[in-house]
Length: 517
Image (cartoon, rainbow, N blue to C red; front, side, top):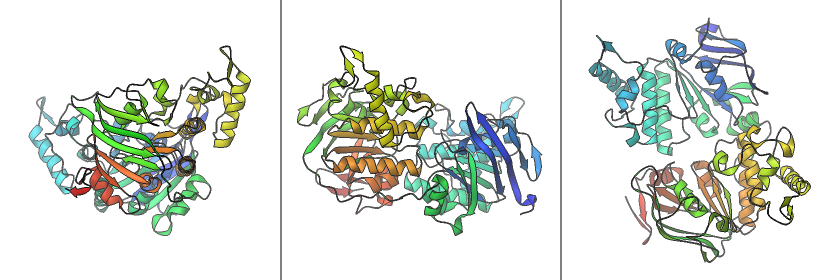
């Protein structure tokens, strides 16, 4: 065993409980000085909880934390900051109307006689920014900069406070491939300077690329720590899920048939800004293919799907589904032909306080098999739900009568997918179908979507996960600032090229099919 002086942070036998669940069950994690240490696990494995304990957001029921071998008590984030521990959260905590500089110094201002010393602060931030290659515009307002830049602001906030232990919680969820490469380089720079990094993720590629060691959590328990140099993705996914997982989507060549969905010159206004979120977009989706809309979050994908499913009104253009113009149709009429796995499973996918069985028949309870003279046949609903629960392996505490709210994210998602696939509609719109899920659940959901395609359904996939875009799609349409800027074939394109289109650095003239950029 190493001498404890080699460890800058030790979390020993940490147990953290929430009602009915041990989020962390006797976990020990040791961080060496100057290393990049990844924390890997499925959704709900306890990674964020453990880091929140280290950052003082939660108090553990058992266990202790040591810094440089000395026991420390971290009651709140201010204690963490005093111990030089900083954290970049999964959801950034920035004030949109403030400038970059003001966000960085907020709460840690240098003052003289009650006045903020902006010039000194600026010089320090500028120096940090240049030293670590974080080139951000200090005078820009946060609301006007990209998500990748916002993340750099969060990192500068952490460095400005002279933090030595840096926690990154799922830092790449919203970045392009180029930004991810840049972030990895920044992290390597920190490690070379002797800073110690904890990096929470469920993406195996990133761990293999940047981490020195990786600790794996599964269902709240510590599984083990391995050297990245002596492991591989398959071994890590086995540790994470507890069984061998297929990391590549298994599918035959697509056999596209008739056009099911045709979108012509669709325009959708933006709720947030004065401009349009979707600008004059046209595309087709055929039966028997998975067409994917790829792009960085916030480039009009959400509004496009809302316009197709009827949640938002379009101000121009035409949508044809199975030969019918549905541009003005009600949501109810559209759903006659559309199965929809929504982006926000809580807001648009489930009624959280309803039981699992009630959620399974949300759109179908009027059908003869489920009601007579307006009275719901509870037995029929339960039998139907139990059939889906078995077929799709939806796990919950009390089976069909479990409230949706109490289920894990992965199982909530499986429930929605089971319901939507079983409706047997010609078009399946799947938005972020595996967001925040682990490799086991992803493998399963991907297989289901391919089966839909092979059963002759048209599948429109909207995804931010590049591995998913590349491995699941038959055709990729890239959206950037409300427009479709490229149509790519996943078999002949690279992740790097896809990233250039996503960042707006490259675009095709889709009428003529040639590129400029």
